[in-house]
Image 1 (tube, helix red, strand yellow):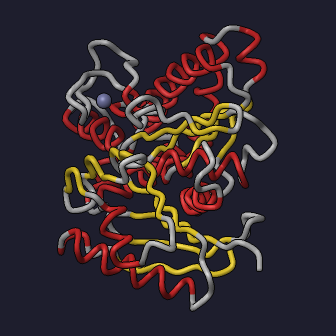
Image 2 (cartoon, helix red, strand yellow):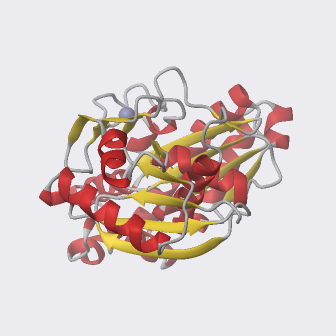
Length: 321
Ligand SMILES: [Zn+2]
């Protein structure tokens, strides 16, 4: 019987999981609400139910979890996860083992790290040894795979590309610092830039009407629509977005000389709004050889990259990855 594992993407809204074979193919998938507002125990109940339903009575050799936050993968502890009931130092592996039994190893990892592994194993980077993934969502996440190994760093915090300083005196970031990549190339950043445009009475823009009733997560889509209609303010926002991303990527390419940078996350749907600016900035700032070497790709697996990456880590449990 071939080895099968479960990979799970733990989100603040939904828990999405899949039964995955050793070839990386999804055999069965499911999604349930996280109920994160009801506390971590409710999330654990939902996870256990999800795992039992996905497994469907079949033997599962391990379960991997991608979790948004700071994860101590060795100790099996969620150090900090603001989107999951704001838990701190929560021993999730121990609590899951108590519910699932000792026979099934549990692996936990940061969600962006899982996304990096997923794209490297089965996605855009399946033919390369080293890549960086940048996930553009509410914030900016990142993960690094070097020569087929996930680079976690000494504290599991490696790959936090969203908090590279791009502009020393730039806009304030959620991390408390100023001018991070996340303050220019995320959905949150787009919202800030829209507000700035609207507070300037001299600017002529249709953004006011477009974003009025939009839920904040949909603002990038509205700004994309306005840009496609030629709205100058909207085009300016995407230019700032792409410039910051290109500056950040030039540093990554100079430091790591990776073969590929994968861009994922919800805001990557607006690819054509920023990619020309990104590539121009990258070419202008990065050293010639690494800039010519690197391929910049859109995520291939999309929402599945975290699940597939978590499954890979589960399949390789016990090996050093
Ligand atoms: Zn920051």
